[in-house]
Length: 152
View 1 (cartoon, rainbow, N blue to C red):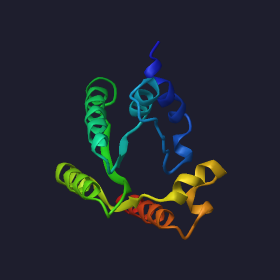
View 2: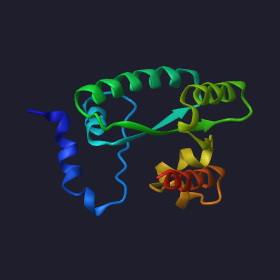
View 3: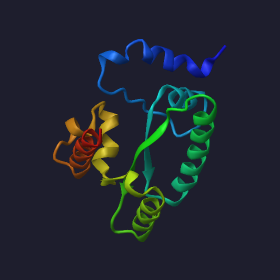
């Protein structure tokens, strides 16, 4: 019964102990993601700077709209972050431009670049900020965190 509310119930029991609760979801729109959307007030959408990522965002927005209308009227888009950006390619620049055009000021100024070190960090069991703190990806994520905090 009410299985889409299980995560919300757990978070509600501890939310006063935290400033932020971040829920990282798989890119699929299964029960885990629906639970996260029901439990959340704000949605941070990462978008890879690739063509097919735009199709995934469309599906996510449809799911968000359904959850908002039926299960969680508080759900809003907090922001959009562009990831795996490669400034040498026209595709990355085109995707960023299209996303900025659609989402406007919801898109964070900080763009997360593609980086080999960021791909390696999980295999070492470390976040990029510890694995390669001077890496351009690490620096970008630190900058993004400050931007998120400033936005509120």
